[in-house]
Length: 126
View 1: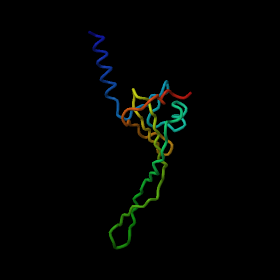
View 2: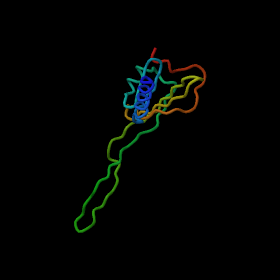
View 3: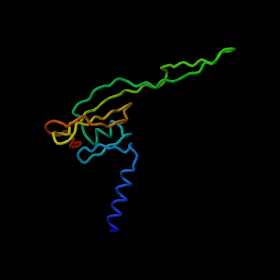
View 4: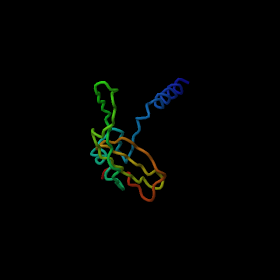
């Protein structure tokens, strides 16, 4: 009975991990949110398909105070821009099509989009 309780406690602890603990397994490689494009290429090899998804710009709110008037706030697009890319990995007909989103060369999101087709491209770097 002690073994069952230990396994149950371990399962609860694993399920209690924050949602940011997602990882993508490709062959023997494993990548996670926060990894760079270089690490993903080393671990997983080239994706099935890449697409540019534009740029993401952080807007900065600037307060401008004038004498005898209320402070005026305005949004400017001054700030940092980061290139956004989406990499698609077709993991075959028995697994999913994975989409990895990179902002400024860093993995920020992992999602699936239905089942893959044909042979798997998720066997890791060759």
